[in-house]
Amino acid sequence: MTRILSIDYGRKRTGVAVTDPLQLIAGGLATVATSELFNYLMQYVQHEEVERIVIGKPMQTNGQPSENLQRVEQFVDRWRKAMPQIPIEYYDERFTSVIAQRVIIDSGLKKKARQNKALVDEISATIILEDWMASRK
Image (tube, rainbow, N blue to C red; front, side):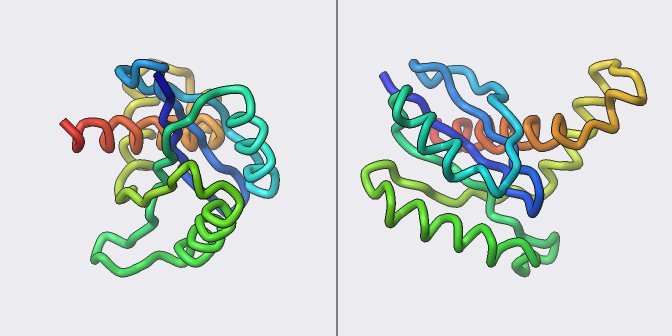
């Protein structure tokens, strides 16, 4: 079986999550500097079989594109040219950061740990992947 990756693309940092090979469970994989994301993913797919990538589509609550959408689209175009055999698709990411913050608070982490933005990015990527998986059932 193969894995599915998800990406919560940010200007500085990007959260990455992945399924297990049976595609039953989603879990956080890493938070990567966005400038290093492409190379990170290229290395990852050389060692793991990845069926597809799901990337959060940044939209405002009113349905309008957010300011980050252009950067996400540039990344998607670059990926599609370099790795057409691994499809990449958009998935609505509205509210994932808010939900991730709530998950962190509910987990009982101390205030210092809750301020870790890299953790929020990784959890957001996991939420995107879990939501995408649930939408396919």
